[in-house]
Length: 121
Image (cartoon, rainbow, N blue to C red; front, side, top):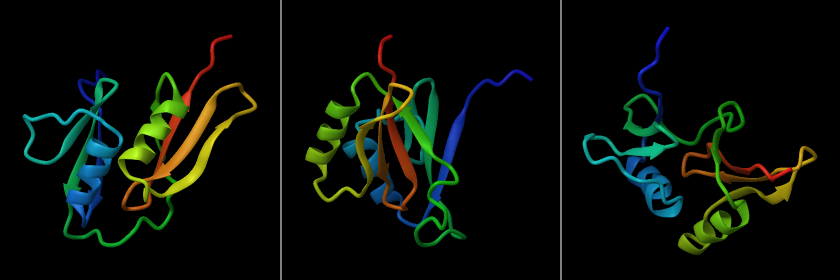
């Protein structure tokens, strides 16, 4: 199989709030050529889909986690908190046993969005 594109579709009943989170709060680049809010992330896309059969928060927020690998978790976390001081946080930035740093945020639907940083050896 040859995959030409990877898009993560997030169905929601609050597309404006989700688009604000991924665009304004996280700072992902919005891709203008799409009708729905679509954000570029490391060669793939996160698409916010206004879906009539989806309502309310996610029931299992840990089932699917969006992992965004960044150079500096602490500074990205601080920037996101400054952009939205009321942003929900599951886990503050913390060093893991494997040496990296992880922070877990919640998007408006309650999905886990993790900021991860590998530390140099």
